[in-house]
Structures are given as C-alpha cells and as structure tokens.
Length: 359
Image 1 (cartoon, rainbow, N blue to C red):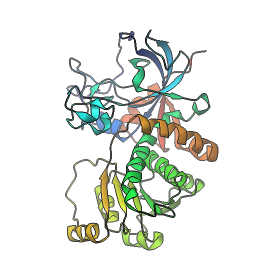
Image 2: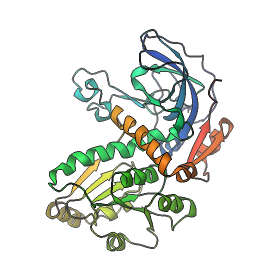
Image 3: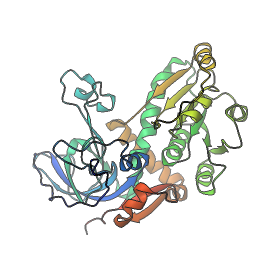
Image 4: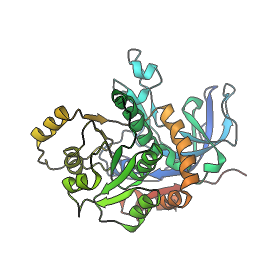
C-alpha cells in the first residue's frame, strides 16, 4: 500500500535475513483479510515504516519456521506459528510496554505489523523475534489463521472476568449478546459458549444462511436487527449480562447499550469510520449506567496470554464444531489480493494462501 500514490501493488523485497540471535525466519503460509486491511487499502489510515514509501499489509497470519538464530530456545524449523501484531513503544516510562503488555501501551508510539510503522505478513518471507511467536499444533494447520481474530474475544473475556469478580455469585447462567456476525463476532460467540454463556448473535443482516447457520451450529441463537429492534432483542433475551460488540457500527452499538441489563458489561471492539452524527439518548444511557451498576469497556489488540488462550480454544472449537469452523474460511490465491482488499467478496473469512509448508 503506497499512501502517496494511493495504489495497492505487488512489490519486490530483498529476502530478509536473521539479524539478531533471537530472530526466526518465517515462510508465510496464509494471511487473513479483515476490515482493517480494507480500510488501509482505502487509504483511511496505515503508516509505512520510517524511510519506506509503502506499507506491506496483513496482520492475521499463519507461518512456518524456516530458520532460527543461535539464541532461539523455544522454536525449531518446521514449527507452525502465529505471530503477534503489536510491538512495544521505546519509552522507559511506559509501564505496559516494559511489562510485555504493549496492548495497553500508554504512549501510542507502538508499532503494529501491517498497520503502523512496520511491514506486515502479506509476504513470502518474514524475520521476527521469537518472543512474538505463538506455537501452533499441527492439528490446527487448517484453521490456525483464525487465531489472531479470536484474540480480540479472548482479551475482552479476560477483562470481563476481572470486572465481574465484583459479583459475589460470578457469571453462572449469564446471557451474552454478540453484535455482528462476521468472523470476529462468530468466533466471539464460540468463545462465549465455551465460557458458559447463553449466547445470541444480533446482526444487521436478516438471517443470512451462511452466518446464521454457523451461529446456530455452535449453539447460539441468531436475531436480525432488521426484524428486531434493540428493545425487542431485550424482550427475546431477557436480562443481557454481557454485550460483545464486533460490528463497528456505532448506531447499533449504542442502541443495544441502552438495553444492557442490570450489572451488565458492554465491550466495544469495533472502530467505526467517521460518518454523519447519530442521535443518542444520553440521559437514558447515563441513568442505566448508574442505576443498573453497568460497565462499558473498550478493548483493542491482544497480549501473549490472549494468543495462547485463542490457540487452546480454537483447538476446542475444532473438536466440537469442525464443520462450523470450516465454513468460516474461504481461500484465495495471492493474485486475488486486489479484489479481496478493494471489492466485496462472498463468504465469511477471506484468506490468501501465500505458500505451502516445506516438505
């Protein structure tokens, strides 16, 4: 992606070499395409590395380790890994980054592969540090590209667990609503079901066969916002204990926030583009937040623990719902990059196949 020329092109890079003892060289196998990639391809944001006129995009990936530096202790050639996205800022006073939790960076000077100041994974070969690699078992080879989008839900649920420790009775028999039936929403629904929540998926689309079918296959109930208002959603669900927003549409988000239940938590994960202002009943929202002991939480990016949890849970999803997991993925050759990044394509989760594992 070249922001000055406003072009999306294939480019030639020199093969990356190991520079540090803890570096690993990766063959990228698959890269997932998400809304962030499409927004970067539309030049809404995305910052090339210093000194470069372009940004290699792609932050959801699966890779094979080809070579390891002399100081690498946790990986060996042939391992499958999912790399992390965010790199810490350089400031000594940033406690989150110095603690290995750059997902909570307090300065904003972090780097993100494929998004901000560092090339991403839509490339044949990449070199990175072992600390940012997450080992994936071979049994997950066909679905491991879903790990990074699943980390969004994993981090959100980690935060919800901390918050809801305020309730002496815990979260048993709680009801959750997922906003959005894209990959992040459907993976979030699976994570919520595994965590014991009765789960509904609330989406703008009126019961599309592919997305509703996946939701129902894993035990969630699907409700379309075109046929059910937020108030009707509440009547259907009852007291809504948790809302996991994964749609990036502020109108839908604030409509459902207004019907969040007593002691409920609302998690925003989407970043909407700048559109026309919407009307919000702020008195109702504020009254509910105070009188119902509600919490509103924003969550972005994920730390090492969320990646590890995502790998564990993806293995469970794959054993419990192999057909549903398989229905999420649509694979494409690299040559289809322009259509996937700038056009509308069918399916739920688009994946570009970069290479096959070495024999």
